[in-house]
Length: 337
Picture 1 (cartoon, one colour):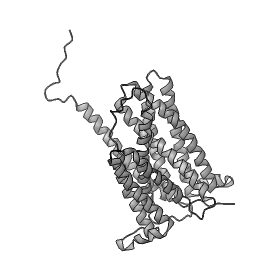
Picture 2 (cartoon, rainbow, N blue to C red):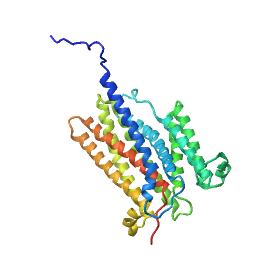
Picture 3 (spheres, rainbow, N blue to C red):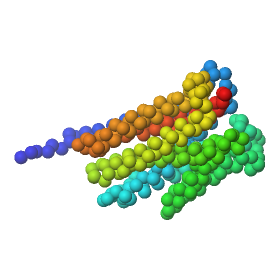
Picture 4 (cartoon, helix red, strand yellow):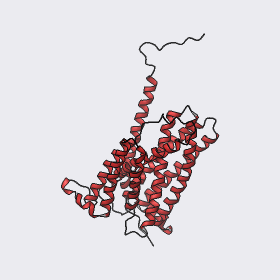
């Protein structure tokens, strides 16, 4: 006969769980702080010794863009994974984590508003309300795109709070289109090709990063069931296609801005090239972690052992998103002939 001893008086049986929760909270805060430092300090490091001049407040602009990109990835990933989950047999669809979409839409709205205020002052940092020319936003292409992003995040927040959160797909699509057009001005050679590449690149990246984050959140609730492993496997197959599209569009876009004969020089001599090189290295790390997760998913006795490398993968993807934000705030590379 086995006797079960009650916890000793004065002890709390949930103390280890509380310690683990505290450790996770500290780790998350450390990651958020580190992610905030990358856009704030990254541009200065990338520009050091290049002789290039950046726009005033480039660190703050990069931080706002990092928030904007994150606010795009999270709801896009939730919608994407919700669609995948409906294809998993026996999936407990009623047991899903709480949506982060309303909070991220609010954060994205604030970031888009901050970026719009920069555009309203002629791409300078506003110091007083009188510096803002809000009416001028309607007279320029960049101003109209900035207003479109502000309105799109407001609409996404309303959709996320409504009874049909799936309608977020429309304002999110408008955000992707606005980013694709903003990144390629009309004066650029072949702007439609560049916008098309960016449109596909940003869409696939948002689905990949945001999708993996939501898959891991769902696995924490579904872990005891086979549905969790099935969802991760289904996501892995789609993510392979997304990775191929991201690699192809990213390479093509880089070669359009840095001709093949100048790439090696510009990767070390320009701020854009240095940041692009850092992004490529991070993507390589992500690819290795993704491969480890897929191998465990296929060969391990417990497919859910892939959770650990997948969790490291989503952290690395977060770093890729932040570095991408820095990339958009830096001066474009020189097109050497």
